Length: 144
Image 1 (cartoon, one colour):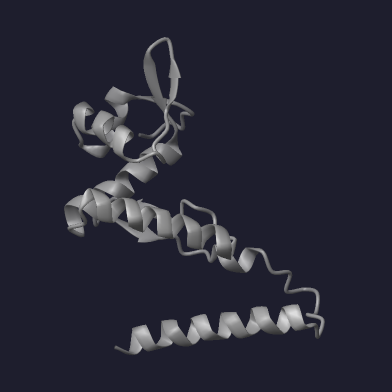
Image 2 (cartoon, rainbow, N blue to C red):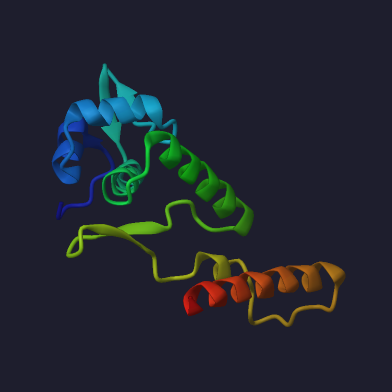
């Protein structure tokens, strides 16, 4: 939608995600991460709920995950996001491709202050060693 809103009705979410309302209600019972505000018996979704619904839709419909597999993926993704300092919602919908894609800006790098030199402590050495290992793992994946 062109205007920025804080809350969306289930009808609006259904239209935006191209999913029936019944599917949205069912997913709400299956995925605890989908947690719309409820007022006067109505559901009000935030943009973060819509992003999550689109991510679940991508996992189930395009990537072939089962509901159980999608739950595990989301749980592991959330756990890894918290551990690394990333913001949980790290995917956005590419309207042209109709698929989720990673956000370009690295959320991990935001937590580091590159203007201040790193002190030579064991904690910093361990963190840098872990980062180097992750980068080497990524490089191996990209070379395959």
